[in-house]
Image 1 (tube, rainbow, N blue to C red):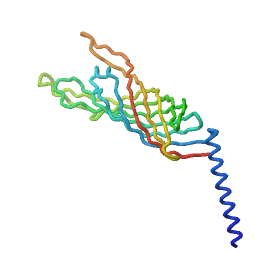
Image 2 (image 1 turned 90 degrees about the horizontal axis):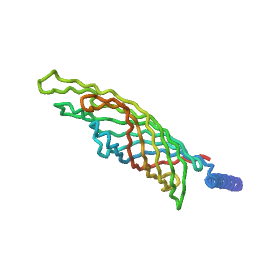
Image 3 (image 1 turned 30 degrees about the vertical axis):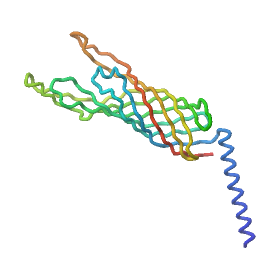
Image 4 (image 1 turned 45 degrees about the vertical axis):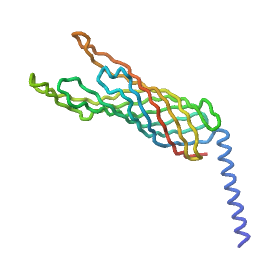
Length: 222
């Protein structure tokens, strides 16, 4: 029996060695699949032009969750991002500005540009849908008794958004990585504003800038 146990031990050691060797070779050839999943947090700077429509354009906290599949120099994934601000109406008697909740579901593609001493630079591009909802979604304004109170309904809006940027990524250990993402994104809105005695309606493009930190847990596949 001791002899049989010794043989089994040698077989197990051999299998383990081959498995590790195969994994190391996959990494060296860049053929290994890696799945990174983790939270994202950072700041978002709104387009200053949104202030013309009474948005609060101060820097806002942005949070989210991202999942990315890596193979060699390329990666693809999806993410859910959330942030919020406020938008005043400008109506006389306003005492509360509704909160604007911005939620985006995006798909992204990445390519590794360069790597040096464990730090990699990746280019990224994204496309998705941005949903804007208001809280509360209805407000009534008392304009001082001149006319009846005015009730405004805030209708949710969904638009396409696009982005591009750079990411610096490094592995803290075999199953944990951290990344710094800088990105510019854009979306369009149907707008209306007064010009003299007339109301001008148009479709305008707005841009925002974000700087985020992502922590990702890595799953390795051969």
